[in-house]
Image 1: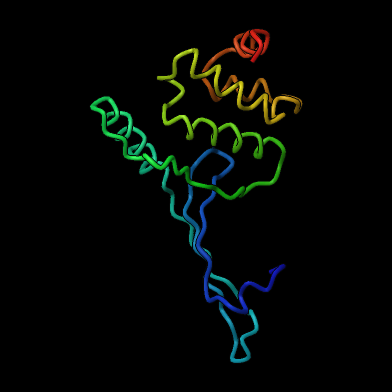
Image 2: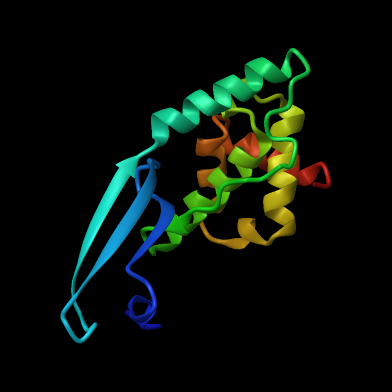
Length: 153
C-alpha cells in the first residue's frame, strides 16, 4: 500500500466500475500480524449494477410525479478499477450519463447534446476514439455526435 493507509485503519470501503460497466461496492479488510504489519488483504466486491438501474428507474418514475429523490444532486463517485485509456473514457462517459439521471435509451437529442457539450468542455473528446465511445454509450451514431459538435457545442 502506497500511503500505509492500513497503519491507522482496519479496512477500506469504496466503489468502482469494471471494464464491462458493472458497478461494484468494494471492501478490503487489512490482515495484520501482532506488530500491525500488513500480511494480507481480503477484498470483497459486490455487484450493484441492478440496484443502481432500479434506483435510476425509481428516480425517473417519481420525478414524473414531481418527487425529487436526489434533491442535493449527490452523484456517486466511482474508483477506476481498470487503468487503460479506454476504461478511463468509459468511466468519464458513464459518470456524465449517471449525472443526467436518464438512461441513454430515454434521452432526448437535447439531453445527449448536453452530455457531449459537457465532455467537450472537459477536453474529453480530444482522445482518439472518444467520439466512437460516446456514440456507443449514448446509443447514437458517430455522425450524430459530430453534428452536435458542429452545432457549437
